[in-house]
Each structure stands twice: as C-alpha cells, then as structure tokens.
Length: 132
Image 1 (cartoon, rainbow, N blue to C red):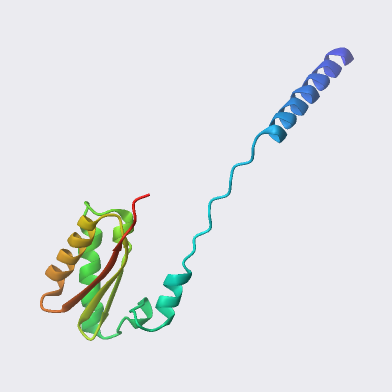
Image 2: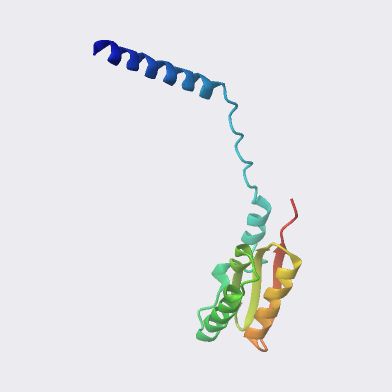
C-alpha cells in the first residue's frame, strides 16, 4: 500500500514539475498597447466642444435627447459602438459626438436624430473609426 502511495506521489510531482517547466519556457503574451487619448482629452477640456456636462436640464431638452436615444438604440442595424454615442441637447440644439464604425452609421444616426428632433438644429460631430 505504501508503494502505491509513493508511486502516485512521485508521478504527481514529476507531472507538476514538467508542467511548470513548460509554462516557464512559454513566451509571454505581449501586453496590449495603451490607448492614448491625450489630444481628445485636451480638446474636451478646452471648452470648444460639447461634453455630457453641457446637457441642459430643461424638460424639453431632456425629452428631445431621450427621443433620439430611443431611436438610435432601437435601430438594429447600428453597432454597439454607434449606440453608445453622446447625445447632448442644450437650448434646442442637439450635438452628436463619439465614434461610429462606418460612414453609413454616421449618416443613419443623423437621419434618426433629424426625424426625432423635428425642427431642432443637429450638429453631427460623430467620428468614423479608422480601419485597422
């Protein structure tokens, strides 16, 4: 009985050491490159562009943003990225900001915003992501 237990113990130790050695020799996975949003952060801090903090608290502006958001989220042809754009409404002026996958998405979101906004002015500042 002691011989079987000793054999199992040695076999386990050998297997573990072989696995550890193989793991040690494996090449490490390279870390992903860090995102550099410095230029965009500086642009947003300058006050020249609308950010979510510029959203008006007036009932009409909130309802307008909500109507556009519902239209965008309800469109099954848009990517998740496109559905996460910023919709900022202040004094009846709607600003669309953020990345989209294609020029078609940019056009579709502006069309949805115009349909939901009626006569409100739309500023389309959506950015099409560069192809990788």
